[in-house]
Image (cartoon, rainbow, N blue to C red; front, side, top):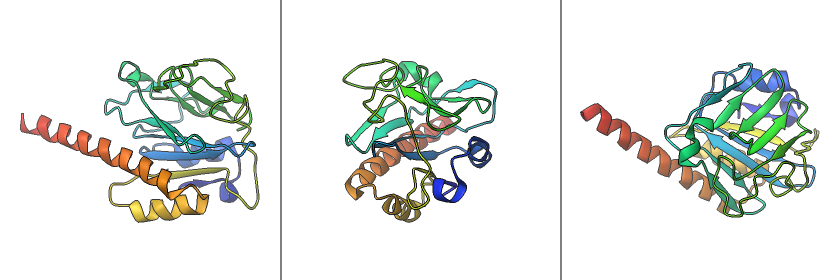
Length: 198
């Protein structure tokens, strides 16, 4: 667990210090409405003034534990998997942005469907679907984590499982996310092996 709100606080500088230079991050958030959502991307987060990062593996996804859904990155939007802007923002996913969380962790919006697949295509600012309200409104709590960030490693599933249990995300949903990550890791490794054999 590289970032934990009860331990590290809701501090944008601290957030960027923890994620800077790291990839394969699974981010889990809890809004004021108790909606649990988040995202995974293999892309490396860097403290830029503003830059989109491409995911050629197409393994990035957004998820909603509340709705029990996973929203994969669209192939035509792979160049907009994440956006790094440490000057003004926290985590940003998609070109829309599909998830925008501002530096205060309260402001932002959801435009799910812009870069990540969403069957109920909305692509509207301040849509409450993911957060349970128009803005993320992630509040600091002394006894309950509202943000957890986990480094996903191929042989580190037990640690991830413990972290997810502490966050009280349903095990059924955890396995759905876990299998999704495993699936794309296998595809990517096979692709790399094919390239090496050429």
